[in-house]
Structure formats: C-alpha cells, structure tokens
Image 1 (cartoon, helix red, strand yellow):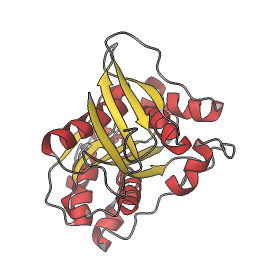
Image 2 (cartoon, rainbow, N blue to C red):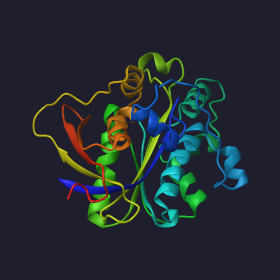
Image 3 (spheres, rainbow, N blue to C red):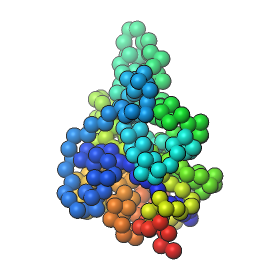
Image 4 (spheres, rainbow, N blue to C red):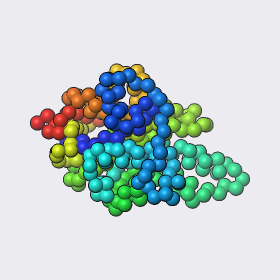
Length: 270
C-alpha cells in the first residue's frame, strides 16, 4: 500500500469548469448539467506555441495549471505524469486523411502533435521545467494507471508529482469503433509529505479479489464516468469534494482493480 497526500486539484469537463466551482456539483450541493466546455490556450505558453496548441494540450494544461496554482507549488520542479487513452483525435484524424490521399505528406507539426507526450512537451515549454515526465495510455484503465504511476513516483523519489489525466472524443469513423462520451481532464498534485497545503490523503493498493467498480449516484456524472476513460477518476474527485472518508474501487488493467481510500484531512486520518 502507498500513501500520498493531495495538495491541489484541477478539473475541466462539460458542466465542470474548474475545481473551485465543480467540487460543489461533485459534492451534491447543486445538480449536474453537461454544458458546453471551452478551454483557452492559457497565458503560460509563449505566443507561438499558444497558436499551435492543439485541443488535447489546452485541455491538459488547463487542469494541470489549476492544480498547481491551488497547491502553490513551483511548477518548474514538478515531476509530471500525463495519462490519456485518446491523445489528440483531431490531429490523428488529419494524419490518417493525409495518409489516405495521393500526396501522403504528413507535416512535421502534425506528426509532433500526434504523439501522446505532446502535452508533456508543451508543459515543459510553458513552465520552463527540466524535470522528468512520463506519458502513458492504458485504454479504459488509463485513469487508474496514471494514478498508480504518479503515486509510485512520489513514493520512490520522495517528491511532488503532478498527474494530468485527459481525453477527447474521437472523430468519425474512429468514433464508431471507439465511442468516447465527452472531453475530460483532471489533475492532482501528490506528495509523500503532508504540509499546510495538503487537504486529503490517498491510500492506494491493488485489490486481491475482483470487485465492482465505484459508481456515482448522479446519473449524468456516472454517464460521464462510463463514457470517457479519463473520467474514471471521478469517484476519487467526488470523495475529495464531499470531504468524507471513502473507499473507491477503480477499474485497472485486465480484470484487476485499484483500491483508493480517501481520507478528507491532511493528516490522512491519523
């Protein structure tokens, strides 16, 4: 089992325009409505990179910056983990269309933005960070794989780690084979030490036996959770928003499960 502390949260999804307002919806204080999402490129990126920023980059950076600001941490020294099941669908679609054309000439910029570590690259430019990062994908288990990777890195390296989980819907015809419900991004700043900024603790462990994954009471939020791989982290965010000690079960690779016990105070229930 690993214990990590949460110092910051970021959130971007339809009807959840940031953690500050979104947590009241997740806590059940107001109803959820899946309103349209709009994510600007942000001010951290230099003008040239801002113009080139693709949707997945804008979405990931918006959540990551919000979490880092809440944690009041130096973004230049954060080790980062980026997790996505879809990458940037618009870029992938454009490349596939080009490859199906007679010219078959893919632009270097398109290729650069097609790889799943594009948000990590833009993050390092935006924050002037020279710290390591990892980008991963694990199909429907992407959220739990990202959380596990971030917790392991924080535990082994004894440092603050930023986790950003993000997905966008695929375009036709790929969406017919792999439906993704809605855009979603969430970010957590994790640490192995509690301080005046940490407000919750997570005990993370593999579960030895098969368990039903945690679902959400709100039908709209649970549809978001089921429809987008990155949104499978929502039960953890709901527990953080409600401020109650909760045991969450997340889908993991294969038939595995990841157990996350959420403690709603910076001492982690100790």
